[in-house]
Structure formats: structure tokens, C-alpha cells
Length: 442
Image (cartoon, rainbow, N blue to C red; front, side, top):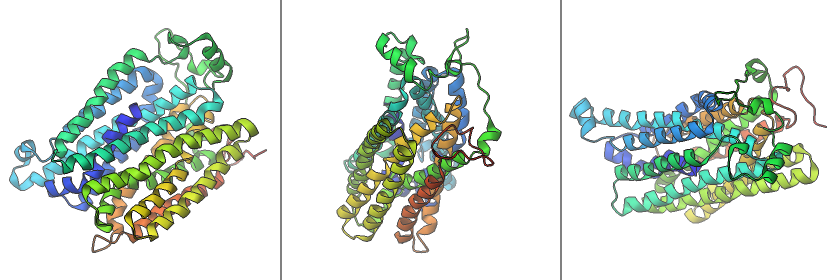
């Protein structure tokens, strides 16, 4: 639920991009920075937000983050209103509206940065090792549910005459409700939750990655986790760490096209309406919704049968990325909007298989530094997500409507992700793999 709410508030600008741009008198370049500004800050705060999650625990940090990003969404609703005119005068209204839309987006990015590092710690403590990909896929499904809902509803509600500012207020409400309910219900450790049975606890103690390292998960008398020193020097020299971060950078750059410029591409290149672009944008997002959990189920099944992470994780990720690139490239070549979006959607379906694999590998290979390492990996992905929306207006050319280069770069980033997967050794820990001493596959 947290992931769904976060993605509703993260993606709300994309479908309404052309409406907001016209209403506020902004340029595509300015909207590119608004779309990407969230991700620059989101990337920068991954490690600090994960660090805070290690200290405070997910029960306190996740509700706090949810309240902050929801307040920022409401703040975005006042962009271009009387307040903006009062701050800058009529001559500076556009600049004031631009900044008032950009700045809350950036603060929202800082708050949402803690969602997945803290969730990774939760999974490491609450899930057996051979169920990490499935649970990571479920978390990814929550993300996609939020992205689909906001893509589906925004275009329709705008066509019905609901103002984009009121939509922001509507999308912010679930975040505060969730924060209260989660804090009352959740516990950081399974043994502290009244609903956990003895059988479930025994399973976690026997197989959970977190339970295999009780000292890292144990609490002091104050109720806080004991600090764990982060081996930054070893991580910086780890080829596995560079590989996992590299593939995340390029995969996220590809995914963010759906959540930023894809509706505008459909409107300008395929000649569809705002409402139709929202509906068509939901097609690849729905495909990704089902692809993530299914990828986790298949990968965990292969891992349970073979015990071979090279096959279950790396081999499956490479195969799915290849299929995804071929289908996405085919979708870029056809002219019919529905057929094009369907092919791109099926390509996204296969590419989404990688997400739970990446998350499960990062958790399994994170050792005692799961939140920090997961935050570093996620930071790399969001640097890619922040880069692509800014690059798109540059690729459109002098006319501002040549989408062909954008589509080929869109395909190319997934190829680059596959190259980093080729270099990844999915064994041991990230700390244990150095540039001087690579860990071979057995």
C-alpha cells in the first residue's frame, strides 16, 4: 500500500503534463526539470534515508516519510495561483509557478527516498531467503498499481473538468491515512508482533537472512538497532556493486519514460487525446504490474530447484531483457497506436521480470548493510530516472516533435542494462567481491 500511494503521488504530473504546461505557461524544458527534479533529490537521499531507517526502524520512518510526501503533494496544488502572483508580481508569475511546482516535488523526492531501503530491511527480517524475489515482486506490484491508477484516473478526470490542482489534493489524502494505520499495526521484528505464530517465527529464524545475523538485527535497551559500520572502501572496489548499480541506472532510465514523457509522446506523435493517452499509458504499466510478481515467482522456483543463482537470477534477467528490447523496438516501428503500445507493453512485461531479481539479490548479498547497500543501488537507478526526462527535450530536435531518437535511446538503455548484467557475479556478498580478487562462479 505504501508503494502504491507513493507512486500515485510520484507520477501525478506525467499525464497532466501538457495541461499543467499550458496552464502555467511553461516550456517543455522547464517541465523536463520538474519531472526530473523529484528524482535528483530522491537519488541523493537514498543513503541518508536508509541510514535513518536503520536507526529509527521502519515502523517510525515509513509513516513519517508518507506524511511528508503527502504534504508536499498538497503544496504542489498551489502552483500558479494567487500566492505565486503575490510572491513575484504579474511579470514573474511563470517563474514563481515553476518554482512552486518544482520545490515541493524535490522535497517529496527526499521523503520517498526512504521507502525502498526501509522496505528492504523489512523483507530481510520478515521473509525466508527463498521467498525474497516473490516478496520483492509484490512490492513492485504495489508500485505499478499506483502508477496505473494515476495514469488511468488523471486523464479521465481532467476530461471531466476536474482541475489538476484538486487532483493533487485528492491524491495526497491516502498517504496520511496509511501512515496512521501502519504505525498502529506494524512491528519492526516478527517476534514483537502478536499475530506471528510460533511456526512462522521458527521458519523465519531458520531461513531468514536477517535471523542468520541476529547481532545486526538485535536491539539495545533503547529500542534502536545497533549501528553497523558501512565498509565504503570495499563497496567502492566491488565489481558486483558497480554492476548492480549500473544495470539499475539504465533500467530505471527506461522505465521512467512511461512515468514522464510517454503520455505526451502519444499525444504528439500518435495523435491521441489527453484521456486516451492516459488509458494507453496504463497498458505498459499493467503489463509491468503482472511481470514483476511473475518474474519473482519463476526466479524463486528456479532457485529452489537448482540452487544456482547464476541461472535463477542472472540468466533469467538477461533473457528477459533481451526479449523486452526486441518487442519494444518492434513497437517503436509500427504506426498503429494500440499495436505500438501493446508491443511496448509486452516488452515492458518481460523487462519487469528483472525488478524482483535485482531486489532479492541486493537483499541476499547485502550482509549487515542491507539498507545502505539497497539505498546505494536505488540511488543509482534514480539518477538514471532523473537524467532521462531532461534528455528527452534535447533529443526532440529543433522542431520539438521528432520522437524517433527518443524511442531508440529508450531501447538502448535496456541494452546497456544487459551489459552490466553480464558483468555481475551473483554470489557471496558485495563487500566480499573486490576489483583485485573477483569471486568466480562455481
